[in-house]
Amino acid sequence: MKILVTTGMPGSGKEEFLQCCIARGAKPIRMGDIVREKAKEFGLDPSDSSVGTLANEERKRYGKDVWAKRTIPYVGGELVIIDGTRGPDEIRAFKHAFGENLKVIAIHSSAATRFERLKGRGRSDSPMTRADFDQRDRRELEWGVGEAIALADYMVVNESSIADLRSEVGRLLDILVMKK
Image (cartoon, rainbow, N blue to C red; front, side):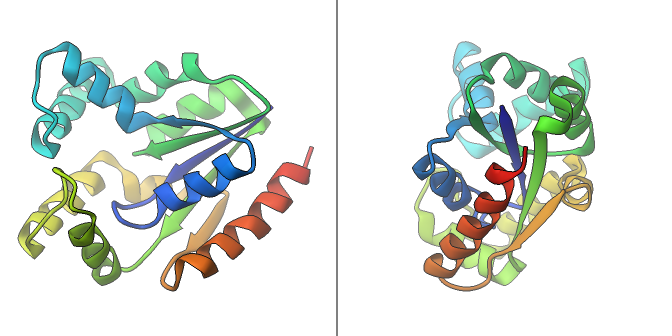
């Protein structure tokens, strides 16, 4: 079993990385979906603010690795991609559960590139102003995304075209999937 975990700031390209992995037969697990499902159970609206607040409150109440621990039971199969790790405690929980089978991949893009991508998404949680974007980045950094990026086994820089990203991801997957 190979487990790949992505981390990175919003808009860096984690979803495109995930899609490349799915195309190679990976089972996708989105940590954000697990948070959104919990928000739905609590009857919260699906806005970024509500979901983000819930994620924060659960981390304070149950520990910074709560979302990783809630994700682990969903992992199974030959190749799994877990999207959305937010901090070092989550990485440690995954490493404890999966050991050498786990590799952390950081996806990096500049703030300017990420802001333009996020504005263009048109999702309910997309920041429309630079102030909203900066606030979201601060929240992500408070959760430890910067530290998670620093702990990554591999880094993919995504400042160019989708075709270039797909090519880079393909090369990386060739290396990771071939390693035993």
